[in-house]
Image 1 (cartoon, rainbow, N blue to C red):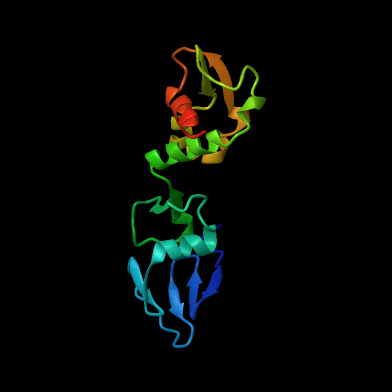
Image 2 (cartoon, rainbow, N blue to C red):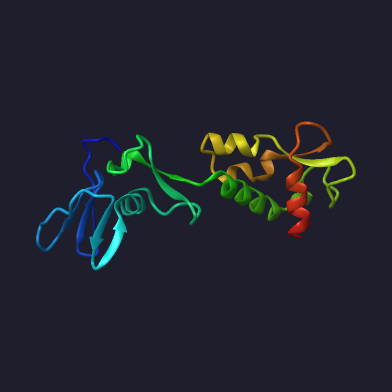
Length: 164
């Protein structure tokens, strides 16, 4: 979305713009540009509101809205993104993996172990560091069964066996 393109969403008696400004529809008053704004008797984090209205709901409800330039007052939608901390990202990938039909993997005989391990072709850490959605890391196309070695993630096996 370009800086010149102006988008406006009406939200509960307020007009929210993609540049992060919020205006009361009745009075026309611009809410002061702070991190937290009072709307309809409730305190609302400006960045969360702008992100939800213009970026949509986050893929994970525990995601946080972050600022590309680090400025919490710059709530322009082009400056916002959803972020899921590493432990939550990793756990989400492992949970999604445990729900996959792993029996469809070549070499998977129902129990990984005895020298065989489940391996992510694109590692979880790489996905996290590069903003790859967790469901793209936890997909059958990114998994393979290998003989034990250095290129494995043994916690996957523990997690899957524990959650069966």
